[in-house]
Length: 255
Image 1 (cartoon, helix red, strand yellow):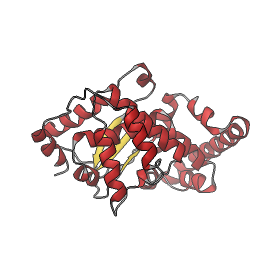
Image 2 (tube, helix red, strand yellow):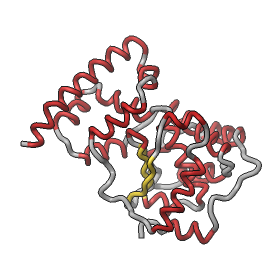
Image 3 (cartoon, one colour):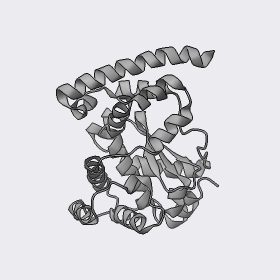
Image 4 (cartoon, one colour):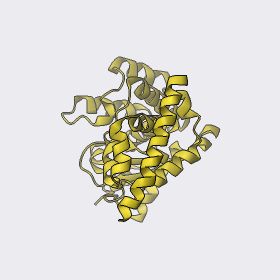
C-alpha cells in the first residue's frame, strides 16, 4: 500500500519534469537549462529519490576515514566556485574497478578501484574527475535526459527501489565532450591542489591496457589529447598526499 501511495506523486512529478525538460530542450538546449538549476534543487531531488549506494558502503577504521578526508580536503574546496556544489565521498565494497557520481554530489569509489590504484595521487585524479562531473552538472543533465524517455518515467513511477537508481548511476554514460571537460577540470584541480598529475595519467593509461576497462573511461578523449592536457596542467611543485605506510593502510579500507 505504501509503495502505491508513493507511486502516484512520483508519477506526477516525473511527467512535470518531462514536460519542462522537453520545452527547455526545444527552446534553448538542455545544457544551459541544467546549469541554471539551483544546486539546492538537485540536492532535494536526490533526497526525494531516497538513499542509493549505501548497502555496501565500507565503514573503514577511524584512521582510514581520516586518510580519505585527507585526500578529499586537498581537492575540495579549492576556490570560490566550489561553494556552488558539495561532495560526499564514500568507498563501496564492490570488486569491479569503477567510480561514479550521483545527484547531489555523492561520489563512490569501489574497493576494486582502490586495490588497483598504485598511489594516492591516482585516487586523487579519479576523484577530481568525478568532482568535475558533479560541478559541471553532468549528472543532472544525464538524469533529466533519461527522464525524457519512457524508461525514465517508468523508473520513477513504477518502483521506489533505490537499487534501480544505484544501477543507473553506476552505468551512466557520458559524452566525449563531457569526459573531456571532466579530464581537463580534474587536471586543473590537481594543479591548484599541488598534487602530481602523473597519477592521473598513469592510472588511465593502465586502465586502457587492462582487460577489465572500467565504465568511466570508455568515452574518454584519445591518448594523445589527454597527454597534451596533462602537459598543459603540469604541477612543478607537487606535495605528497600521504606517506607510503599510510597509503598501504588506506588500500585496506574495506577489510
